[in-house]
Image (tube, rainbow, N blue to C red; front, side, top):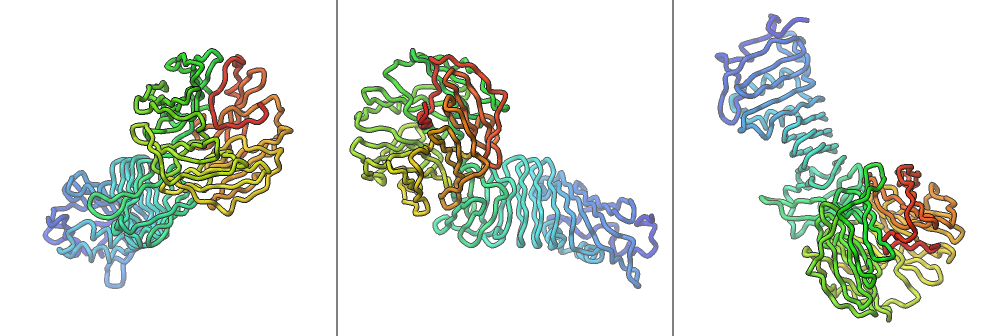
Length: 555
């Protein structure tokens, strides 16, 4: 294969002028050298920059001008002036060798952004390095992967597929250029930047995998686990960030649910969730708690990513333990409230979508109220919730059933009818007409959780005869029966906790036999369950799992 320099037809004078490459960077025309390889590779070294082009450099027209296509390019710079373009490669470029040579011969083309914009008008494949890259797709339907590092990724016009890779990545574009894009791996720490949006007029709604916003929509390959928060960008535009959805009973903040236990004598203990779904005793929790105190609720009440425990005394007094990194707890002096014993805590969840869990209260007379969690771990009453609910209706579960980042409330009438209140951004609720189901009174909602990992909480149902069933949450807040769950379970077994014990993004089920034996079902992507051999523990019958909103009716 002939090398570039050996090809007599190649016009070296057209490529060089006085041994200088006329594609300077940031106003400086650097001296360059042409590295000889084969007819498929051309490499230019511009001081600290290296530009390697792959393509056909051996095809010419009748006048001896190169006409072959360039198919790939790799750029590397260690110069801080060019750091925003450092270390990336792409293929599928739509430019010929002749166009490229014409471009770099023009002394006015001194900025790498202009060169890359010219090269990247087609459907490009762009791959970043392990560094913090700035990757620009410009026109065309591009596929961009940032790789490792905290990358800035801009697809430009077209329907682009954007992957941040590991690190905290920013997907930045105009409202119109984001429209039609797909982000494959949006997670906590990543950001979406709308360059030309104004926070005062910007609106958005996440429904399943689709993010609709003012001016367009984009798609997530996997629904984000958490809720999106809009804020003003430091210079201009709007940033959307993901606040992670708190994992139920994750007291140490490691992304796996833990199990809080209590002995009949009041002693507290904890089992910490492990990556295999098993549980390991945590020596940091070995507390004696007076038997007049009870676990009333759990949730991330201060928004630090660790679950906390709300305690209530028989005399009505409220207290709180805040979860610590070691899985232990620290008393929170901000919560020391007297609450009349006619009021009861009937649920917890992030009803206003601010990333801090709230509690739902109900009076013996049916009146509903809400306390919103604060960053101190304390609570503030919410005047938007002051509802009278007929005594025939009971709160049977809470969860984010429609995947909008705000917890909803599932209600059930004594006659079996199901209804739903959807959480609103002010912490109030709106009735959901799509949930108006008649469910036989021999069926009961035992627990809620995201068993299939789609970002919407589901319902686990159990019949008086022990049969298990599941309803999967839908984007409109309704439910669809899941044929994958139709299990007979001996009435000796009871559901005692639901949580993501293995940290895979799907809720699992902790079971206990009347003789004390423990077992676990791990959630699967189809919403079904698989037995976990890692959990097969005997537990003395004087110990009890503390999960106040699991309603096993067969206990």
